[in-house]
Length: 302
Image 1 (tube, rainbow, N blue to C red):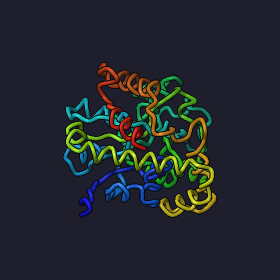
Image 2 (cartoon, helix red, strand yellow):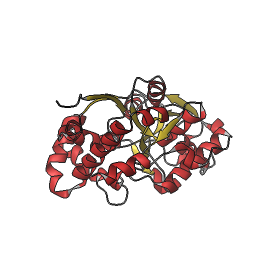
Image 3 (tube, one colour):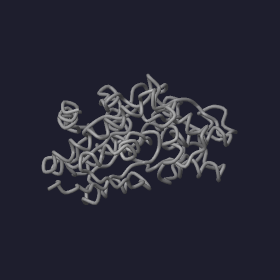
Image 4 (cartoon, rainbow, N blue to C red):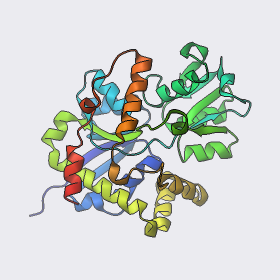
């Protein structure tokens, strides 16, 4: 008698970073391991964290900083793998010549106190702008940040990743460069879970990570390029040319998706330092926030 299918609700920000999950679904890598994965698009990082803490989602994929925020708020969450550096670029309205011109302007963010907001603050700090020199409008996920800037020219800047960064360039917004070029290595999207859930459901988590890694390997294989681009078109509702640019970002050998979902420890440390600087509280040691044993067991069985 076949084993019962395990149902997993997983919340993600659809984009370049979600490609391995799209592949795992499309190619049957989840199903082959007895998993039925319901990918739910995230409206913002607060819903991700709240939903995980309340048990509505088994796994969430979001900025590593979100997992740290959850732990510091008293929820015992752990990062279980790496993912990417975020693929993020800083975009401004066409009238902005220099980042110093953002003084007195309104900037767009997911939420003001996690994730890429601290990166934005650090980039501006290096240009002589403190937190009191601009205001933040919280609007949510990347597609909402792009739409806010596109529809309202008073929304002066936002951090965006593909495909929204590609759309932003085509809409005439000004690309001020890659985030990692400004601040150095940074751990972006990661999968994280509740520690207690991981212990109680180790088999399901390992199977899930195996499928994700298999989807990642399939996506990065040049032999699958055409099929991967079609998958991106379908899953993100993109025209072929933007899907091809998104594919190029995902497979970039330096700044693309991390091979086998490896965690970037140097990037993780950068994230912790930025959070500590802007929150004014020292974080716990990096090892408190992740447990890579599940990923290691997943790799060993692939």
